[in-house]
Image (cartoon, rainbow, N blue to C red):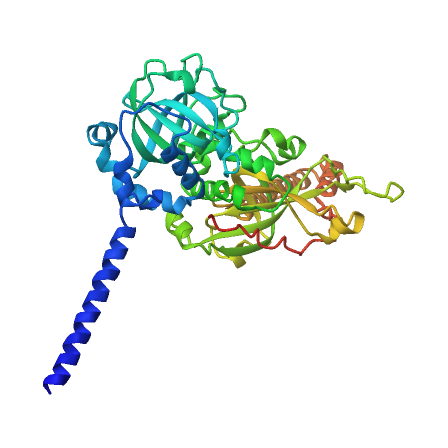
Length: 489
């Protein structure tokens, strides 16, 4: 009996020890600095107030780490430092070493720096050093793997930014020899906190501050969309959504959920205008009305993205948009065989569009086949297989604008109301005419009814004319398929 008790006691002791070791390991992984990849002991190898160097090993390792961190990881570890300001960091830098912080402020200058030759085989060849000011006017520095391409370098600027980054150290920037030969980058900056990030997000607050910024971009920026992300979208235009532009897709989807038609203030362009000159309208607000041919619900299969957006699904609508008197011609590419015949694809009556929305005004079944109005933002063109285009040019594919929109507005009800109103008016007019005829007929049966000829003309005008029907497109009824947005890494 005693032997059995000793076995049980030994087993319990071993199990408790295993739990202790497991708990200790888990706790170590949950250190606020764990995302940096540095061991806790390495936190004490960094010396504050050292001279800045482009070959600093800690900074380069943080840059490489930042380039591989997912948006979900950045968000998770930034929770540890929420509410901690620059002053607290400067007062006790060792306490916050390699932790993740939410960084906001205005960029004053950006300078590109090439990494030393010994790092030529690394994933990054260089980085950008930016001098920024916080919302309270306090200066600090950010080393970033990338910045928006439209930002000017080596010159003064004043653009809002937001990102998450690792705090490395309080660094001495008083000697600018290694960063900016003119000294303009670090002018007026001596000791300042240095943060390291993957990319500095751009949220403009002025029209035309940088070339191409318009009211639509300001509306998106106010609702959390990094306008610099459209650089990746442009590079991937006319292709399926890939990892490089999926972040922009989900930012747009998140932004439109908070918007209403009144937020656009009439700044949208029309559908034909978008098709005529799409390169000038990435991120631009659009409005159009068309018929929903297909509607499907798309499940967001990445849990972290669902939690970040507060959405489990979004909806993809395949639509046909009327072109009016316009014609849209899609040029076919010249094949390798110069003797082969090619034919451009011409759209005369309508053009397909793909619209993604976070919510619908009813069920999927209720919106199919309906005429709806879309308010949203043009993201890019994307390409998918289509029988209609493949008949003319097998390698061309169907090109369609991808729009991220707010909840669609069903137009059928308003059209029905207008039709009822017109029928009521026509009925009243008809009764009035009939009353006049009766009156004149009773007052003087021998006199020719002066309304007789006119009445027959009205009758001809009131005859319903046959509805004009367009020839059914060969690919009508075939959906573009799920966009297949890849999960963010």
